[in-house]
Amino acid sequence: MQHSQAQLAAESHAEISDVVGIKEQTVLQTMLSSQSFWVTVALAVLVIFMSWLQPSFGTVENVTNVTRNFAPIGIMALGMTVVLITGGIDLSVGSVMGLVAIVAGLLLTWHHPWYVAFGAGLLAGLACGAFNGFFVAYVGMPSFVVTLGMLSIARSLAVVISGNQMLYQFGPDAPIVKAIGQAKWPLRAPAGWAPHWMPELSSHFWVMVVLGLAVGFVFIFTAWGRHLFAIGGNEHAARLTGVPVDWIKFQAYVFSAFCASIASLLLLGYSGSAINAMGTGYELRVIAGTVIGGASLMGGYGSAYGAIIGSAFLEVIRNALLMAGIDSNWQGALVGAFIILAVLLGMQSPATSVGVWVRAMFASKRG
Image 1 (cartoon, rainbow, N blue to C red):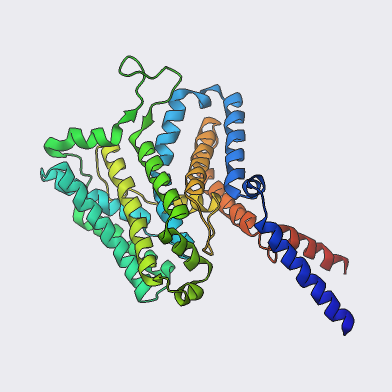
Image 2: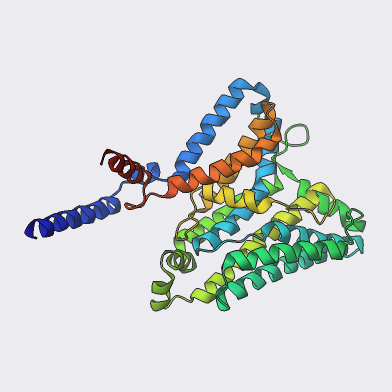
């Protein structure tokens, strides 16, 4: 009995020392333990390898295409990260994109000013987010169920409102709408000052960067950001400490819909048309980007940088597959595999880390 108590005390002492060691990690140790850091390393290695294997991969034109293609996913991933941190999930973001595009596209075809059309589209998206947030935060329904329902509702509304037609006759403000979605900076000579080796980055990319910096600032320096992490870490404890849990969870879903709406309006301007199928399947890509970037599906952890770098990693893989001549149908399999791998790597608590699990498995076999 005394031996068991001594062993228990030793184990408790070891656990306390482990926690102290975590608290005393240096900046370098913290960086090396970050999943987003290793995703960045993997992305750099992949880019270098593909540039060597396929010279056209590393061209300025391809870099321009990749940054433009992943930016809308990165924008939406920022909103998804906020939701995931609270311990929820938003499956409706792709359908919200379609509804927002159709609402804005209809008003443009009716010759309303572009800012009226964009404002109406944004309000439609925010209404979807408010619906999700209300039923999750105040009614207490599971986020999976509510947002899955909104996925169907928003897509059906987009089909009905559009008459299942593509909208492309945007009236007198069509040039402005296209300029918003197709703008690039910096421009290369002769139109601009940028040298020939510098990519022309799209408006999508710059919106993502600005939004990413804003979200990162909120996570680190504001009480709202701290409350998000507190809710995801222990919602009951957060309530006891006076955190307005329901209101913040409601805002998280509204913000996710806001990000989806912004991405939709940018894609509307880039393509010059609105279709009710816009965003179909994007929810998987957005969730994959956030999880690969290090956000936890269990809540309590996520970062703006991780959301962006995870989204970039997925797009570079997709682009590399196309460049290598691999069937594009394999993309879904790879995305699924990376989601599983990312979640596995994220299971790094003392009780559930991969190393502990593997050692326990071999120990049971020897026993």
